[in-house]
Image: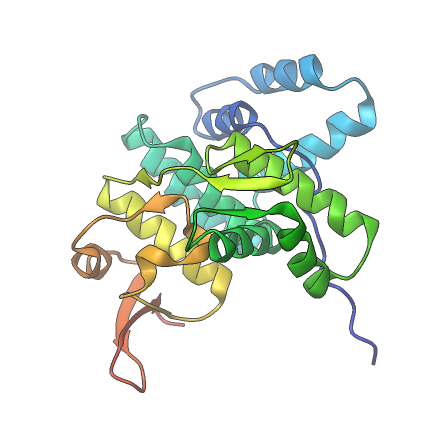
Length: 239
């Protein structure tokens, strides 16, 4: 049987303000009309509005069934601490709901790890290897890169030809740290080494801080284990 290319899904640029408003709507802190007005003000056609709304629905408003409980815990974190960084919360939902978004993030994180920047050509090449040499792959990769720029992760220079990693955002609240790590585990679909968690490329915009093992040991959804090499790893509890 011929293998099919992975679905893209994340096919629109999502401005941080739109994601933040969708989060507030889901948390009961804003009205849906506020989000509708934002989209109406920035989109000219009905098709464009519908596609953007579809991405925002899956991101926050109507998560797919297997992510509802995970999303609800993120909403509670935001309700309990409204000053929680919106980029961190939306990033966690994006990499779990949209593997394409996560793959772009992972590639950017790897390519910028040493020198702090890379070319967009390098990112497109790696994405084409995974998703095929299609115009849609290139266009949607650009959409994700534009989104990640809006969310404060990178700066695109030289007319978008070069990507520069911006300073990491420190996540101070332990419960948010644990939730974002859980998102990384869900994206990877396997336990992850705690020692390298802070340099995990898919979460390259964020600093998890110190005492990560202690923080994760108190997370009800996560479980600390040892792998075959006696390295401490973190996985989903019961999985």
